[in-house]
Length: 77
Image (cartoon, rainbow, N blue to C red; front, side, top):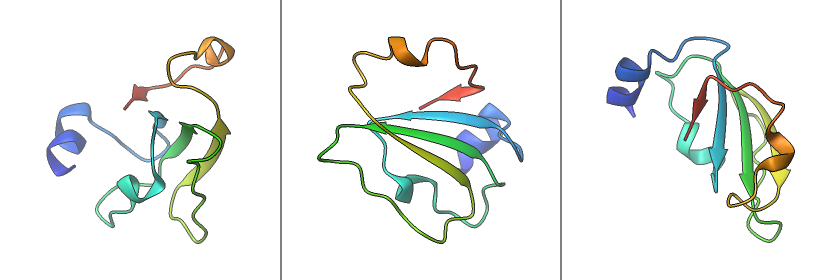
């Protein structure tokens, strides 16, 4: 995760779309506050409270992201 932070130049406010994600992936103190959309199947979405990032949980299939086409994201993971 530290290497990705350096390579992708993630900074405070960077918008991230995490396909099939889990909020624990982003739970690192060294990460700046990010704007994260986590897309996962309804039965898999696990919401985390008290998180340092701005997180939106979206139920859906990562193989069909047409509904998100209008959203502009800085980084997809």
